[in-house]
Image (cartoon, rainbow, N blue to C red):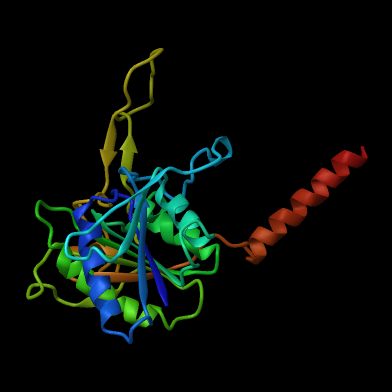
Length: 279
């Protein structure tokens, strides 16, 4: 069992170090050689990058350097000049040893709840892995100074214990409140809320834009520190974190939409285009 660990905050982020330490101990509890850990993470911060791989068609290679984690020097760790998603692709397609079985991304400094999952580089990393048939776990913690990353790391390992036996392409999004072990109220299945990072853009009223200037952004509850969740349902992911629970949500990667309504729209468009081409 080979576990590829990455993040979007960069190779030196404290959340990644905590996750590496916890998974390294988890690997050590198995029979020798049964579990293997490799870290392939961005050299610098790529927060908000989603599943972007950048202009890879302009590149013929990816620069890397080895990284060492204090107390875990035997862990193979590499910092890449790449986004989280590209790190996963490089680490899964032969660039750094054997193909992994599971991707774990995090621990992100800030929650990834609501519609922010669309923009998250942490979530984007496991989405990239799923396209190669890999299962994945994205781990995030509510942002505060001196966040208790070790608590989120321990919860992540408990989830990982179950994920390794799950069907391929199983994707889970774990968000943990910034609480001590004793204060954490538990883990619940969370729904993705409708909260977004950006709540509104521009001042009230119709926009009257000059040739250039600035457009004001007002942020919603799906921000790293977690904002006002009073309009969320109790089982929404953001509301659970605010209530002191860790939220665990299954995700689905990009796939064909087989919904009847969408298929009807496609068929109507095909008929219209075909009629136009015959004219």
